[in-house]
Length: 219
Image (cartoon, rainbow, N blue to C red; front, top):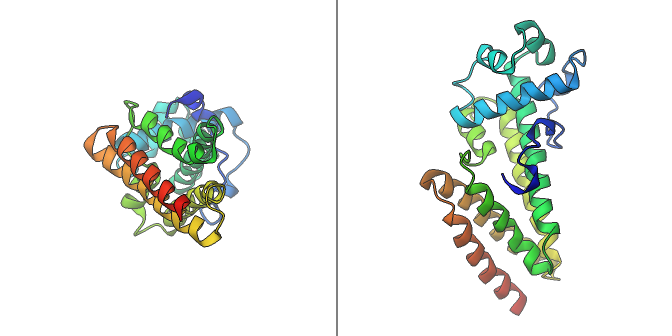
């Protein structure tokens, strides 16, 4: 994800998704914060590039350059590390979208800025789709905690879009309906871009979003 956040992932292990029940909130604090953040960064890169199930803790230990003892002191199990990675991705996503929106002018432009953010993200060579959709696809059926974290991330995004839609459409129900449609466009663009290996779905989604916004404001 470009913007000024592209080199900031190592500090993104403080996300606001609910990690209760995953053991992440019970992780020992005896390991230095920077070391924990580095482990999360390495795990995130490996999980995102190759999939969670294909990457073992020993490979993460090697990539992070820490002893196995230190790795397990920081994260007693893989479930806790997965939760930390997803929490970091949630925080990274929220700050990236918020930054793009803040740079836009009008309420309409703020809604469309979401798709501008997506287009820049899709153009990054490391883009492999939504990390939450990927994690849910791998583990959602067998890991209630991963399913919950993914669901809460998507719900958080829809609430964010609903807040922006409310600035454009005064009627609450109409704003919520518009937000649901716009969020669905963003979600579909992520999956399509990942499969196609092409950033153009963001532009298609943006133009479709503009049509929906204009139709909603004419009512």
